[in-house]
Image (cartoon, rainbow, N blue to C red):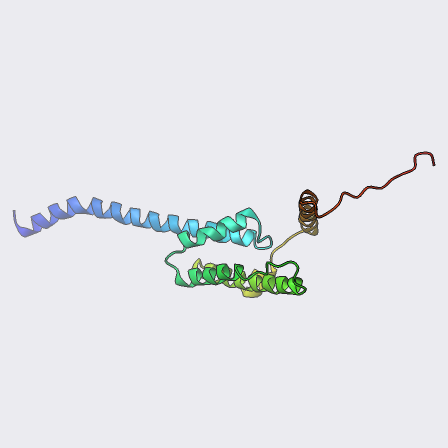
Length: 173
């Protein structure tokens, strides 16, 4: 056997192995992109409801699914760090103003995060659309507001901070 025969034998043996390895690499890469797209889509779908469980879970997946994307992880770190800046003293006279400022800053940082994620996944949205393009029906907002009011009222009642309102009615009238 001469050298060309050996090359043919080696090629016959190695070609299927190399082909399988290339296919596995392509599949792993595609699965990674699919997981990243899933996180991005979930954040896009829930961007109008940032305290929803699905939104929070998607945010917490960023470190795993985008660990090798510096722009995305840096944008996420800025948003996560900002969450620690929310005011906590409800008795502070400027509490509501501080809270609204933090909420607006959170929206801007979330917009930056979504922009970086979208760019890395070849979705091309402008920041105005990312910030203002979400749909949230008034009925949903009213329901959440009512639920929050009921929750806070019950907490106040159970803690003894809020009395039970009672109205006496004269039956004979």
